[in-house]
Amino acid sequence: MTFNWGHKLTLGFLAFAGMIVYMVVQSMHTHYDLVSTEYYKDELQYQQVIDGTSRANQLGSRTTITQQNETLVIQFPAEMQQKSITGSLWFYSADNSKKDKKIALQVNDNAVQNIDSRQFVPGNYTTKIRWESNGTSYYSEVPVTIH
Image (cartoon, rainbow, N blue to C red; front, side):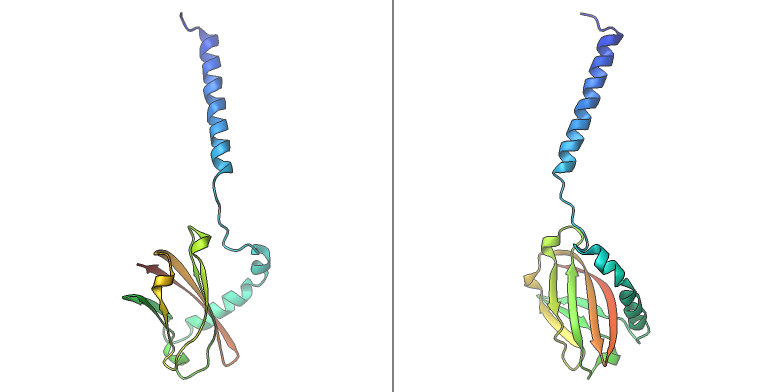
């Protein structure tokens, strides 16, 4: 049997239609995580994040997170020592929202908080830190890789 232009056109159309069907099925089974389920509400309050980041950047040093064995050590700037600090840590995983964790701040007098790293799934996180001290709010984002 020889293929004429009609057969080739039909096979090309069927291959194209099969590819489109495959792509539609794949896209319907793909899981997408949003940064926040309340995106629009959070966007309206984003100016607070900008102001808090600006205030945190004016401090003498930045907030750091290091992993020492099975402990995450969060060190706040020196200006926060001997001050009352309230707030939260949000360990945000961009690839899987099930790995996200929110933790309340419980900082000691040296402006340090220790967290057991075994409660996390190993991977890359962006730690979003919101804290308040003496009526002033601060915001910082620190990338961290947990082993």
